[in-house]
Length: 170
Ligand SMILES: Nc1ncnc2c1ncn2[C@@H]1O[C@H](COP(=O)(O)OP(=O)(O)O)[C@@H](O)[C@H]1O
Ligand SMILES: [Mg+2]
Image (cartoon, rainbow, N blue to C red; front, side):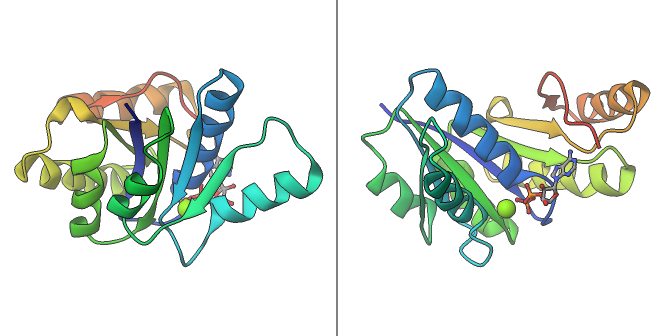
């Protein structure tokens, strides 16, 4: 059984690739057979990262490959324990296809209302299409202060979602 964790957002630059790579590195170190499926074929951030680590001989080696769709990634990655989807910034439709396949959908977001409002709207759209709420979680990123983190956590909680424990600081 392959567990699929996907990092999605409509916006670019929110931390999808950063978190996908960090999770992949930790999962491999913890003994899980792990692969990153880089669906952002324009940026290829995780592919570049993979190559850089290989060239520098950095352990543990984490495999990453580019795919056009989540379905293709799953077909090629079903022998892994964990398939991590590094999503592209794209329309809700592409995100929906990813969310249907994933066991957990993580949306990184900043703490400002300008970030949070569209991010919540994105999850609402997935729920409306039948994605269970308990598959959806926010990851707080670029957080300045503990107060800011608490406020953002409360905002997503009021919207009916959870934010994963901890956060990445700005
Ligand atoms: N918390 C953070 N603090 C500083 N830089 C960050 C942080 N999170 C992400 N970045 C940087 O911001 C840029 C965009 O992040 P990335 O993970 O590539 O976003 P996405 O994949 O969502 O487009 C990258 O250069 C990344 O290193
Ligand atoms: Mg990216």
